Length: 92
Image (cartoon, rainbow, N blue to C red; front, side, top):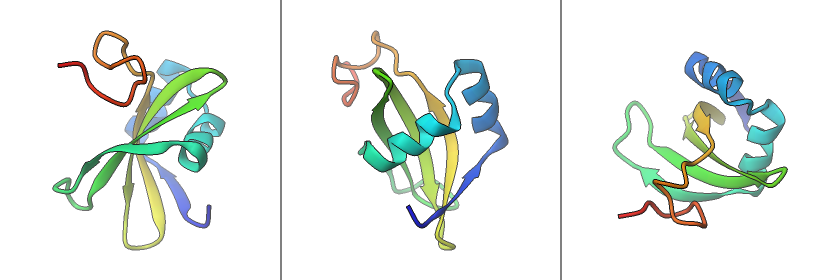
């Protein structure tokens, strides 16, 4: 990954609360997949990634800006009550 990572304060707080480390975020960025795009997010479009780290599903919301940076907005363990068993699709 050649892009520089920037962690928003919100992301750091949530990562701490949810016991999600920087290694987990980097792993999801390298091996996960985009499951949703938010093209109208301002100031830059964002994406929701889903990946696995140490057998835990993790969602990471990121923004790629025009300076080759990835900005981590938040990260969380998806809730089984809100997501299908693959954690890639929301339940209806």
